[in-house]
Length: 181
Image 1 (spheres, rainbow, N blue to C red):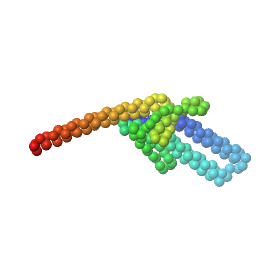
Image 2 (image 1 turned 180 degrees about the vertical axis):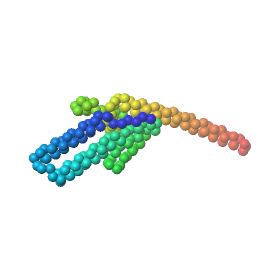
Image 3 (image 1 turned 90 degrees about the vertical axis):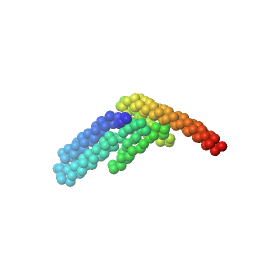
Image 4 (image 1 turned 45 degrees about the vertical axis):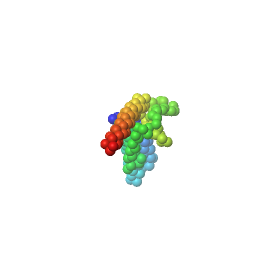
């Protein structure tokens, strides 16, 4: 079993953006209080604004942090957040996964070394940002091929068993007919 999480720079970018919002808010507060005498309602407005931005940061961080792919013998389990109170999981059996590919597009993606692993199933495409996409997509593809080949071997053994049961049934029928005569 393997667990694949998001690309670590995704967290770093979120933290940098949060610190920039804090810096901007502080500078705005300082510039307003340098011109006007600070009054209580202004402090409450900035305090509530900072609390709201902190809650937004925590929710966004958890949204990225809790998303993961779990690769098992039965298939892929995808965990992702839809909103604040809803953590979803979706199981993708190996036989339903059609293709696994990695993709990089755009100048920003090249500069930040961002990659997407895409898992295609029927008409759905699941995108997941990772650091080493070739390794992750090869891991998923190799595990898929290995598990499907094991399923094919098991199916072939069941087919052989069915032939044996049919043959044995014919022998039993012949024996019963011989006993009746």
